Image 1 (cartoon, rainbow, N blue to C red):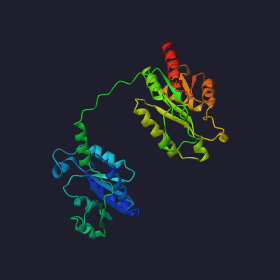
Image 2 (image 1 turned 90 degrees about the vertical axis):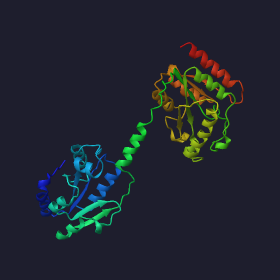
Image 3 (image 1 turned 45 degrees about the vertical axis):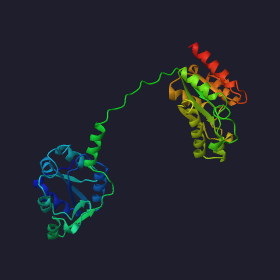
Image 4 (image 1 turned 90 degrees about the horizontal axis):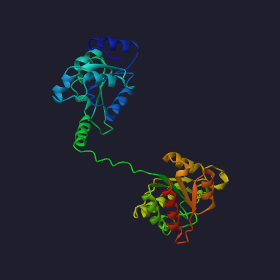
Length: 334
């Protein structure tokens, strides 16, 4: 922090002029520094070569603002403002008006922020004696210390909601999407065409009751082939999640591979990258996971990692019930 004692301001100003620097001066309380302060000081520094900021003392703030202010004591406010990249020096303003400091420094610019008329600023006339001028910077960010204090007081009135204990989970079920959760539609990208496979919602509710997380792992080469966009893929997922949520099913995460077969990625099933990511994210070993899908790619990826897998036939109304029963039996052995 380049702190200038009030008695050394004249010498500091002379040094800046000798170096050929254009001096800017501004002042303020800078209590609870916020984005509006930062933007204002950056704008001010853009108008000059050397910006000195006079920070109001605690006593002066109590005099012109409130006997209950400032929130932050002057020593800390000086340190905070002085640490900003846009500020070259700071000093303490212990007067109701900045004129005594301005007359010592003799800045080229006296800078204020707000909706003032620069010609009507009380200290502006003094600057004419050495060819200086007053400049007003318009406020661009609607923030203030007062608003911050009011919001903090408002938040303090609200008791925090009770935090529920994290739901215990015993394992994870990694689900294919198309043909497993939703009925198969070639390159599905229209939310209106989303329809759940028979029995899937009831089965997933049963698995959740066993303490199992549910995540989706799906190949979506239609994105890579340009048949639909990622946004359209997400819109289809949203429609699916709404249908599942209405039945009490919660999906923890959706993993997808957007690559086409020709791209030879490691995430497209039967590649194992997506399954590995899911296990790592949720902290489960392969022995605490199940893969449920409708194709050989699903069971192949599971086998490569030693994960138990089950096959769904979307046209068989008993398929999901049987799969849920098999997983429940396996969990019972843990």
